[in-house]
Length: 152
Image 1: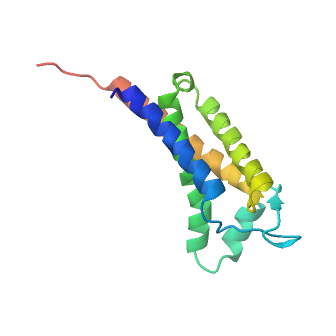
Image 2 (image 1 turned 60 degrees about the vertical axis):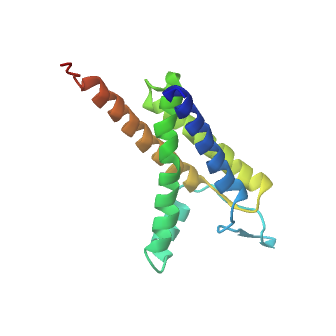
Image 3 (image 1 turned 45 degrees about the vertical axis):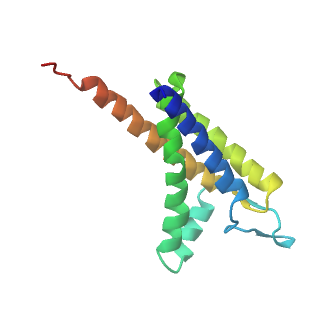
């Protein structure tokens, strides 16, 4: 199998897993909205939940799982998208914006179709993760372009 085909398949498998985890898998972030457990809930105030999680969590485990987990969840997007989609290779910005729109679609779907909390802070953290992944892949491309191959 060609490397390009394998990378493209990897990207789409990753996207499928993200959709599964964020929309269909366990609901550890169940909403306690106005209609009680399972009610629709949302946060449109940037950094509100990040602050609350960081300040009010009894241990460091919850902030690590929630905050760092959201960043790590989207790092593969930033890394794999430019590899799988050649048009994204030149622009970290384009990759990051595409990831932001993907995250917004997920958060909108969580609000409309599931009983999870739709949160702008998740979009911020996911976008940060994709940005880091895009920088890493750009760095890899740059290093690869600087390697001199010696033939004996």
